[in-house]
Image (tube, rainbow, N blue to C red; front, side, top):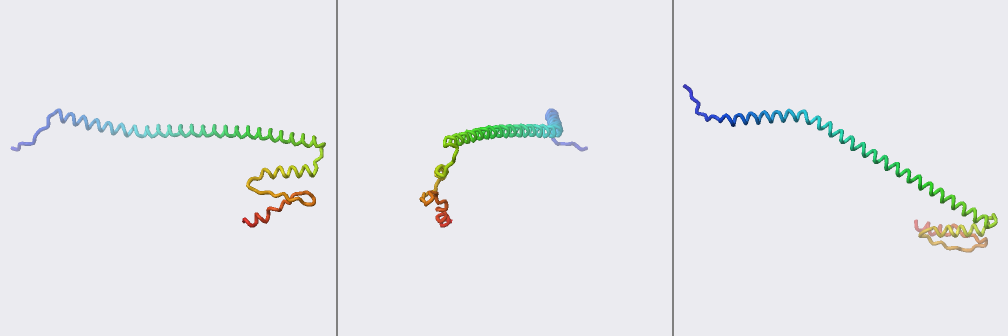
Length: 141
């Protein structure tokens, strides 16, 4: 006769172990179904976020274009006013542009140049020498 001398586990522990194994198996099966659904949901949310970002970028571009249009309109108005002022100046001069006035305009334009030294040299025709800075510029290069 053969007798087992191995200790027997109590019924409560075996029952709890079986329940735990079944719960783990159910959890694993549930995760096999839930993970694909989660991935689909995550992709949907990422798509919505990307769409919202694209929509915001489009709105920004539209506002920038409106600002550029407004700036161009204002620049055009300023140019019109400048032209009106020049026309008024010519009208005041009795409609004639004299060489003296052209020289005055040239000298006034030269004041807009920055970091340049302009030397006015009188000539027999009272016109400025435009090529006076060429030797200086060629030596610098």
